[in-house]
Length: 486
Image (cartoon, rainbow, N blue to C red; front, side, top):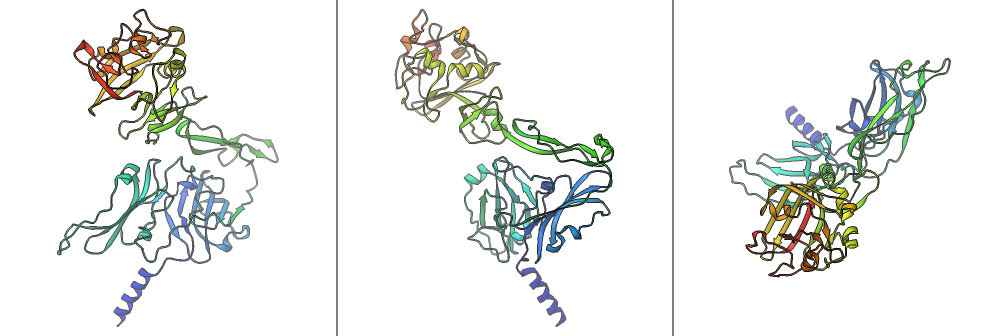
């Protein structure tokens, strides 16, 4: 009878719904409050807190977790602990609100970071997961339910966006002996902070209470009266981020002030006069820099080649081989490319359609030299590529002369290297062979060219079209063209 009572009692403890208090970050002695990656479900009449402690060795540490409401008053705070002096206590009401406070401004805002995700393996219930992770910007939260013959298990964590986009729900059979085959009951991705706390709305997990997205309802700050002696004044403004593209660090400073002796050096104070935090910027010089910090969707982006003024370009961000600035794109003949020199200089067309970026921008982007790639599709659907390791265009005073070398792949090296050293010509600023007029295009013409991606659009069997014809063997006529640099 006693054994049955114990079993019933244990079962009720396991299956009872979660406590009524908020879900809070819960860590000890962290160098920054927002570094905490563990959670705790509070009890009734408890709130979340973060506490700043000046350790006996002079370092600032943060502790977070659950605390009773009445503790969040100055009168009940202990100034000293075994680890050092408590210098600040911040309490807040609401789920996951205590990853900032006491001078810590919290993590970077979205979309400059990925989501907070629960990350655990082989949990019998989603709410058992207490471990968190801040995913990369190109990741989402995921949770998957398995049944292996002994019961349900849940695995949660970060997943790549590409994996989530291509994922389909699986229902895999198992035999009657319950071998290692399994049934996936749900397999979802989501992009909000803490969104993988439960498997899904359609696959209810009894007893779990997902973190709310409600704002903090109350925020109570309880500063501690500092001990006598030299103390710091208020913090100054944050300095600029150490990086304009990607993750960096920024600092702020404060002065050490002794009310008896006047201004002292920071060495006179027991705490640090420098505070640091992580920062993130996307003021990047080109598409490859944007790709390296997690942007992997092709489209229009603003780049800052000189780190001051920016302009829009189209970035080809194909996963695994992205980071290209598109200089020219044609695919349907909607844009006329037999243009004047001024038009080719400034650029024309639509970045979301057919366009030429402009010689002014191409010149600035390719000095020093860059890799150039042509992606060319014939009218039968075949794709061809042509790559060179060194490509640059001179400035306006040299009529945007071409320099290209270091053939990597595709056709013959002479296909484009033949034009190296030639100026850019158009119908109103042509060479002595009148190549621009004869080829209906602006291009780097010698006499004239083996490659012309700016010719007349359409299936043509002569030199006026969009063609490649090295050694005059035969014409490759192209329906789609991309000219890109990296």
